[in-house]
Image 1: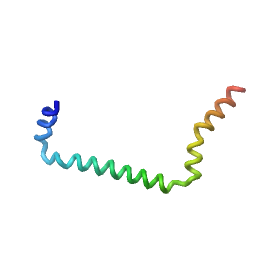
Image 2 (image 1 turned 90 degrees about the vertical axis):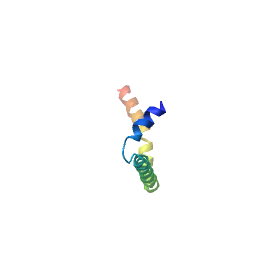
Image 3 (image 1 turned 45 degrees about the horizontal axis):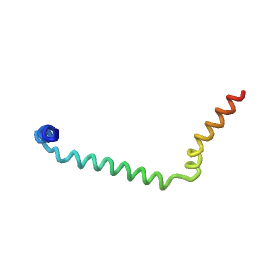
Image 4 (image 1 turned 90 degrees about the horizontal axis):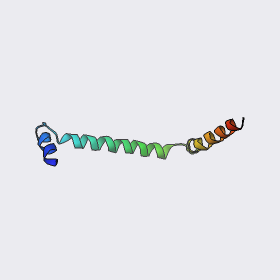
Length: 65
C-alpha cells in the first residue's frame, strides 16, 4: 500500500514542504493553547469547571416542579 502512496507523492513538485507546514501548524496551535492555559484566570477556570454541576442541579430542580 505504501508504494501506491509514495508513487503518487513523487509526482508532486515540492512535496517535502507539506510535512513541514503541517508540523508548524500543529506546533503553533499547541504553543498558543499552552499560553492560553498558563494565562487563563483561575476564576474563569473554576467557573467553567463547575458548569456540569450547575446544569445537573438545574435539571434536578426542574424535575421536582
